[in-house]
Image 1 (cartoon, helix red, strand yellow):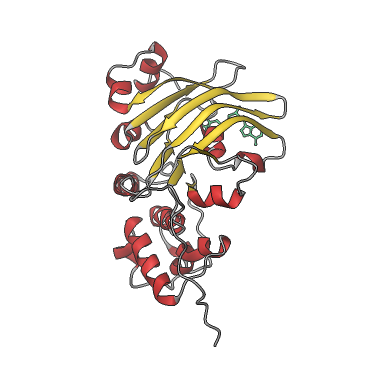
Image 2: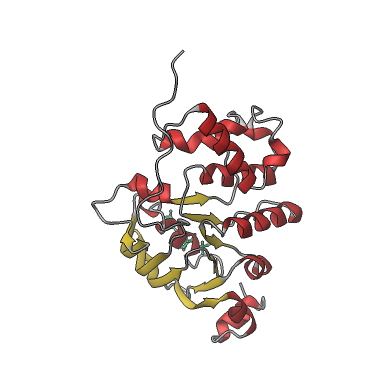
Length: 277
Ligand SMILES: Nc1ncnc2c1ncn2[C@@H]1O[C@H](COP(=O)(O)OP(=O)(O)OP(=O)(O)O)[C@@H](O)[C@H]1O
């Protein structure tokens, strides 16, 4: 029998500090699809251990901005980008840096849960290790599966059926499985693109509780159209807006409570109070 043991999981990258919490900073991000500019000089600091919500009407560039934060924007052939994204001060777009390192440090959870349906729950959690070339022995993997599923708020529901297919779980469970999967490679930032929009209110609440727990060890950035969700989970908010035919900009950003209770810009007030969008 060939043992799959070679090394233990790799250490958390240097400079991460005792807890591994990292600040993400976007500086003067401008983005294009072909000739069309969709974001214009957007700067935003997403504090370590915070949950930053990106809010704003459809089409203002929130998802594009989020995808720039872990180098997914460059997957679109016509896409271009200017500006910097700094993870604890280091530019993830530095040509000397590897794409895989950015993706590994900055994980992503999508709108629609996307587990590998035929793979078991356990294999789903461990899938990222293969992609990043990380080797671990059986007991390390078992511990990792349990800890990630616990952090994803799914362990008690699946601990007796870890070999069942991931596709057999409910939508909310699948999304928590995807969160557990993204945690297995120990990201320092987790990006979430409307992670609850396909879920019922109960599943949404469970994911929100999970996010609040996770924020103790990973910096979270979430795109949400749900203002109540932004108010419930985020510590900071950034309000994006694109005037007709113009690229998206951040109109206002700051502490969530202040953004909701005392916004400085009338457009923010109108949006968070549901008067447009
Ligand atoms: N792959 C693409 N190719 C061309 N244009 C795109 C692409 N993806 C997004 N866009 C355009 O970029 C602009 C910003 O889109 P984006 O999806 O980032 O907005 P959003 O604020 O996240 O919208 P929503 O809230 O509806 O998801 C839109 O005008 C959109 O049509």
